[in-house]
Image 1 (cartoon, one colour):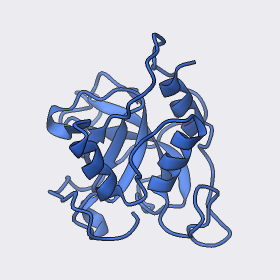
Image 2 (cartoon, rainbow, N blue to C red):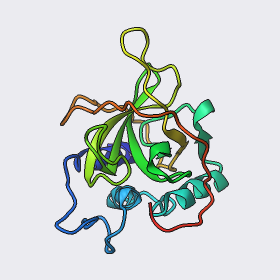
Image 3 (cartoon, rainbow, N blue to C red):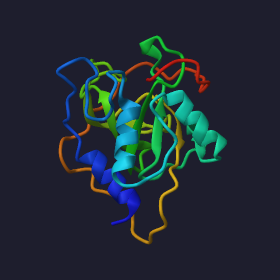
Length: 200
């Protein structure tokens, strides 16, 4: 199994994990703080993958950009194993504030993403929901076709880890475990990747 496959499989294996008993208390970090980035760091560490520290998500995005391993969402061609960085306008934080691991890229402009510290439904807190969940997220504005309405695009860009070279496919089956939830929220806003605050 390729390193990328192992990375994704590690994340998938954590789906359903719930923080606690204290708020933001998880096995992914020592300090009890928002942990979506700590989850990504932990998954990478399990498979020996070196990535920028994503505990503070704007700093993680900035590091990928500086390493020339960053794609803005408007021009992105994501791959399984990429890291999706998010901004949720309704959360009151006008910057990148969440991250997840791309499990699968769909032909309709959406990706299946494994995310730590999110909510399994649209009503819950998307960046501090306390669970590891599989989510359907849009990366293209027109992403669902005529049958279903398009999902809002909250992804700002993708960071691409430098995986050890392998000839295996990184495609995974998104039908495993729980079904992903669909997001219907407000349109994406502009945001900064300038690291000025602590973990999110």
